[in-house]
Length: 510
Image (tube, rainbow, N blue to C red; front, top):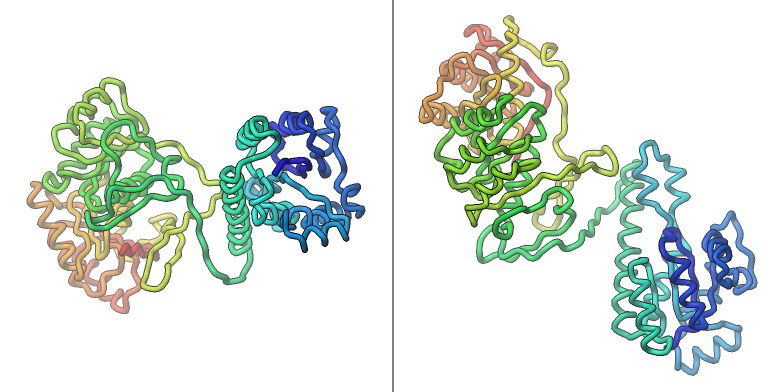
């Protein structure tokens, strides 16, 4: 099908003048609208207004201009179909062989701070998606271009084929257009759902990043979708596995809790140890000292560039992944001697808006959607419920433990000092058992719990958990509160001189 007539109506005008000029040089009649028509005329490219083509004026401040039977009839009628051909002749419908449309910048508009609902609604494109869908439906005869990056491919085929494009190209471009309109509609629905009180269905569409060798276990297939590569850059090592990706995400979420120089070690998404210190090597030593067995084959993350001294210390154990904002050249050279070690650079990334990210979980027959756990507890001094308030050092230990326990699988207990973890108990059915494991881990590591803080992700349902922590050496406790036996727990703390704060925030992690 030779291209003889094109509609060009674009929001992103990158390269459109050169493209239109090349079309005109091949004898293509160009129909255009609004700002696109004005630009093409400025470039001395012959352009026919859409109103001249349809015989109907643009109206309602431009809301109605291409929604017309001559436009959609020209796109949709089946070439070679006698009935369609006769109808087109009867109603003066001329064929349109090429549609070049990209849409109003809805996503860019709503990403701006303070964007209003009215502004967003005005950026909902109606005519553009309609033309894209009509052209894409009839891709057997019509070429549709939604991305300026495809201008060159269309022109190349037209030059090589006497004004025609191949079915293969038209099909690929039609699929691309349907994906674009689908993503566009989804962005609109997501914005409206977030900004109004209406409950509606939830949908998600993400680009494929890569096929993975296998999933959580070798017999499971898996793929990665989304924009992971905007967050991390792999500098060295084998392809990332399904479990690597889970651990990297858990590590990044944990390290985001800390502004001070910090190192964290994780295994199966649970922290094994976390340490903070102005000297990153000392931070590593504090983290590693918490548990020297579990980190084997784990993930290490730090929030400062990794230098040679830290690299030498870390390289003494086997790790699957090391993540840092950057690596000194000599540190990277040392670590790259381990061919199976993945080195990941954490890239700076900002969300288009400040709303918390969504957390998705599959359930049988459906999908659970929640906001990421980003709750703040405010001033800890106002949360103290015991007769004795914590000292400054105890407060620091409480807050350190609280930042870590949020990232430990429930039931979770963390014993901590002001700048390090001392014992971590994760994922037990009983909170007392989680505490016992944390105490045992500290004993195995040769770490004293005297004067430490204990952090619990959820309330102590009975005084026994608080009593066990005090007997282990904890002098402060931080927990959400909210048990019907809170008074008994507070009394047990007062009897033992333990300072305790109720945050009012729970951090269950399943």
